[in-house]
Length: 256
Image (cartoon, rainbow, N blue to C red; front, side, top):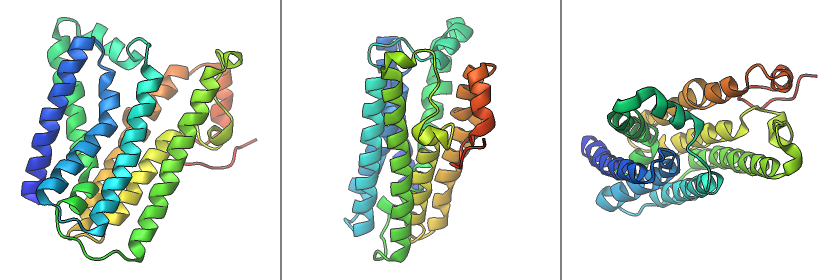
């Protein structure tokens, strides 16, 4: 697996460097968010072409990551089209001043590249080595993956429709899946990676694939996902009331 990791790391380094150059040209580091999902497609396909042998689990993993990564990239592209740079990157642009370029390269693009490598662990275990035949455990993994994908997709669509409606200007989303979780799209993304890790359990040393969902769940729940958005709306009376009745991450029935 050392060769697989090295090859994946090289692909990711080249890819994220090119994305960094594009961000400099466009003067918008938000392009890295679009590149996130596409990066998983690229690295899994590259490793498959170098190491894979066309077994069923490998094709299944490639199809799932292509569906997820392509949808996510398209969603973020549509959401950001015509908008200014995301508030997180804009704040760092101001804070970092003359060191913005070098700090962007390492603290945004290379850091995301490292995280991409870690989260893709179950994928690499599947597409980078010989696999046993499919069995019931793969069915469980697929079900978990599908549940997560639906949560992320439906949550994103519900939020996009809510924002698009002028009547909702200045309001926060509290309906649909958002009545059961304050961040159903983030929960969905974490869940689908747990599903991918279950698929990888059948591979040699498959337990190492658990690194992926552990990392992405920690990031979304405690670092770059939930905390930043919660901080953005903290103190608003409507959001504080929403917090009291709605689960922060894992979906659950509202508390009335």
